[in-house]
Image (cartoon, rainbow, N blue to C red; front, side, top):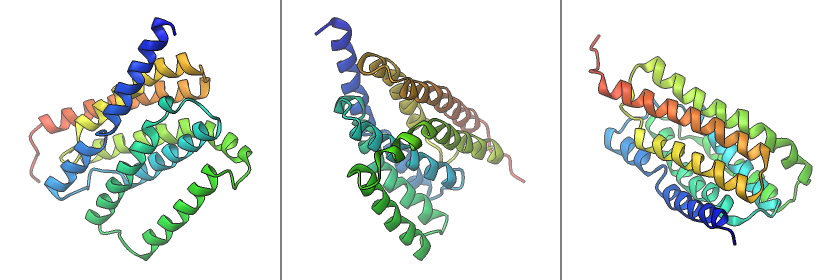
Length: 208
């Protein structure tokens, strides 16, 4: 095994390790302020879609588990985060329960290839604009509110860092241009959200 490949494997392990706590700072922040008004629910749902499709895409293509293990790890945290956001914006109802059931049925069909694999081949290229859109929506939510009280800059720092390490590890593992483009765009947008959150958290809140 070459030195570069060993380094890529080390980065993969670091990335996976950091992803175990990726959403934890955001979850803790929401619980502490008991508010989620600056968190975009649309952004979360878009992010959930992207993570789900990319998990299925990597799994069904037989890529190295180390190159995508963070996706299922983040998905578990994403479920908790979405639940908390829906709770604090008072959107936990029968519709959200029905959508949850439908989501898990469709996710299972993708992973088990109950749906034709061409479906994932079609959906995977859409994950880059979906993932980018989720971050743009979150960035706009912060800019509109001119407040980031419920947003954790640490979560977005970890997101930017892990996406950056993935640019290298994916290049070493498969050089899949679809995945590389997705991660490069994610680095830029996650960094933008982090800096915006830091900026508005540093500013005093103006009282109307």
